[in-house]
Length: 539
Image (cartoon, rainbow, N blue to C red; front, top):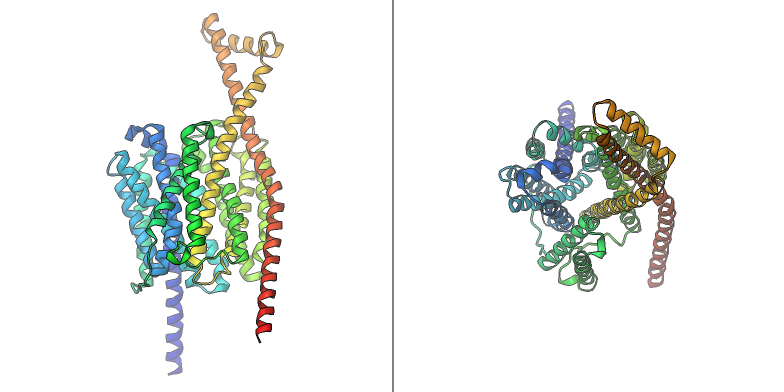
């Protein structure tokens, strides 16, 4: 009898572990689906532009509505998770994202594609919130470092490394719609694995604050448009950008006033995580982390495509070593925290130093740099980001109460997304301005009569003439070649300055983050002492 009980107990334990692995795999695959949808247009933009016959402004709307829907979902999804089980929300998000990805390939109509992108954004945000909440609920506290490291490989590493490489290959060898079709097998596999959780669900009486959701949607759409298109129209020098920015800020301001002053009438944060000092610090740091992740993920492939003349596949593959290092750092840091008992916050300074060192090395790149020259900096970048994100995730979320956890996850993801948008927008503007400035400086040194310039022009004209071009045409072509070389050198300098700007940013911001961490900690200690004193007085 005892042997039978032990056998059943062992079988039950094995079944529980298999269910846990299935759930983890389902969440990671669902996060990969969101990664595919999030990065699709960064690689497939040109092909989609040709098929839809859209203007650049029309094509930009496809990205804008997706990001705005995703930002809105980070506030709506926690309400849904609170109303029903996280499993049900995750399953619904995976189904909607799968169907929206398949539907997007059915027509090249721009309105239809925008509708599909809205559905993808809402589903993607729901997947990230519900999936991470499910993992926190499903696994004990002591296993969370490794579990969150595995989740981050799909939610953090994949969008910036793996999916761009795969999408570059698909675009070079097939067409843009294959990017979205790739979500179908991922979605089916995720749903099959998620079946291990069963179909049990519940419904808690909850009201969705429709007016606030609409106000949030308007604000996120307007501000996303400003961040994505502001650089193109020289920001607030353009009247439309200034008006849209003002309306967006007004919408967000009204929403904030409603949340603070009229919470009983329906709130997007019925259980706010902002009372936790660690969460407030993590939310602040998530802006910087998102800036670093998305900003560098934009800057490096753009440098490879525009300066080093890489193909789409080559630019995508360039980040794979960085992605591997990021995944390794996530798993290694998770194991160190779980097995060795290292405090998560202790990893953050090492992550910042490694990332800043990588950007400093990249700031010495030239037009003659190749994959081998970028390998070491990219490995350092990936490893540093892995340490940083692992530390921030655990510090920010692990101490939250179960009721506040979905709302904390939504806000944390919101902060990363906003930081990434701001980073990409600022870097675009910075490079544009520095290009113009650096070209002006270089042109001032290339004037008629300058010995070096004249010698280069004569050498270029002579080389062209030796290939059968007549002397007049050769002279004109030599001038064009010199202008091209000058433009390229100005761009190289601008990119190097942008890489160096990351180093300066961390040098300035990191001390403030340390100070904020200490101040928030001291404030929490004072509040705890005051509460304890009041309780003692009541006794």
